[in-house]
Image (cartoon, rainbow, N blue to C red; front, side, top):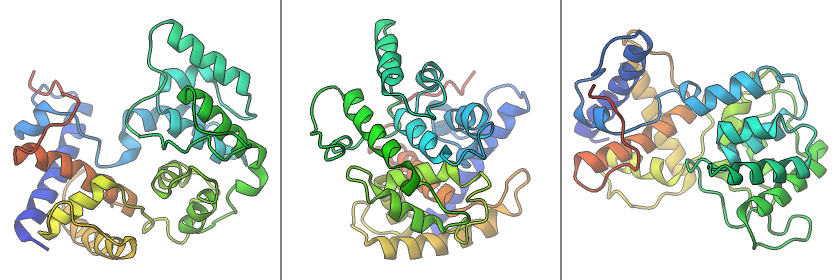
Length: 289
């Protein structure tokens, strides 16, 4: 591990959460001395504090936490990832394709986005599900994708206290479902009773491109050096332990699970791109005043 980069990572994590805390306390801007955090938008250290996650939890997840098909609602929520579209659609259990198409057409008719661009929808979503092929509008391909999952809902739902890694494997048996995206669905679902006592609740994580680059930076490796998933996971586990030792002494910071550690590495990669002049995040943040 590169000591300088580790210190930059932990400094970023503490400062980013400090922005959240100071904002919640109603303190005046700027909420941080970090000029990069003042200018650009970064996800929270704890995914549960992000705006979209809070909407999903408040409106879909918590009220339906005992629904055996909540997993399906979380799948729909994360592929769309836009609260206004989710509100227009309504809680999607039972699934109704016509309501989905109607919600999309309405959003388009008023000139609003259907999807939030936080996640890239795989081009194979909707292919080889129900005998269809890729092509046509994205929302139609997703409609086929969602319908396939709903038709197989009883075999796709999680078992009580199932290991998160095993449930990710199950979701990934469907063509078009990547393991990273399965992990994002599980990141929501792990907070309800059926998976809250999973044996790997704290340790499960799946790498994404940003977290692979972020971990390379922390370890002093070339930023785009490739990883084998099992090796990435081992290094992530060690890093989480080291980061936990630092943040346990920071007021207002809770323990960090592996999926949040993965997210932090992705955000840290974005942060370092700005710091090193390699690029800038897409979204500005009005953190100066």
